[in-house]
Image 1 (spheres, rainbow, N blue to C red):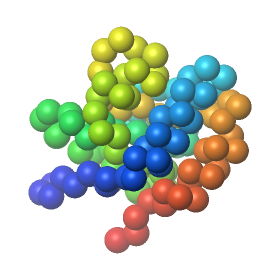
Image 2 (image 1 turned 30 degrees about the horizontal axis):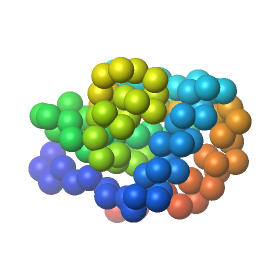
Image 3 (image 1 turned 90 degrees about the horizontal axis):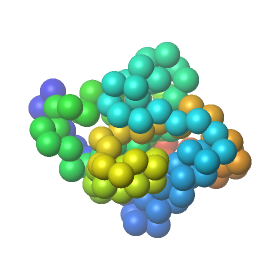
Length: 121
């Protein structure tokens, strides 16, 4: 899988995505970590996926974007693991997270899905 490319989002959309995950963590349900996120995508329970753009080696998360596209699940690359970790409530960096239930963030999730469509090849 050559050509691992991160989909760079404008800062305001990244901030909206992080706020959505913060609300979902408080009032809904999220999964954290590459393995849990992979399972959620494969099972079709993930509603939105974020992937840290600074994971090293990138092979750890490079399957998440194509898998999300295959299942029609919107995803976004966030600048760093620290941002992902802090928004999902862990004190360390996290490579990926997925919203399972948006909770009070349902309307925000719907709006973000419109802004971030999975790319068609």
